[in-house]
Image (cartoon, rainbow, N blue to C red; front, side, top):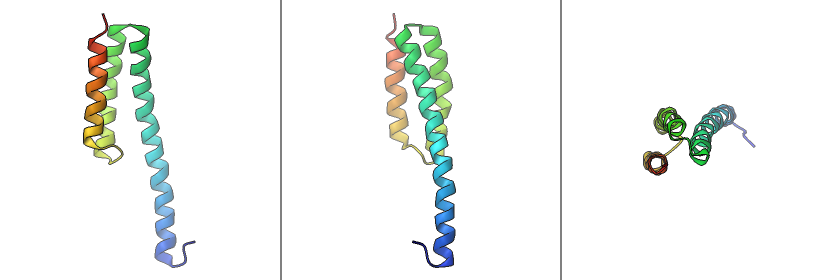
Length: 87
């Protein structure tokens, strides 16, 4: 349990930060899920537009420190390869 004023403030800050990060991570997952659903439906144009809208979300996650740069790059690469492979 936090005892000093500084540690109490830190605990409050961590709570707020966690809530913000959780919301951002959830938002990113939602965008990725939309791409996955478009890929599984086989609709190439829908998958491509979903991928284009997911790309800035992933990069925003990187800039906000939620995702590592390489993780986002890997996800983008794999998704774009799957979208490209749709006949």
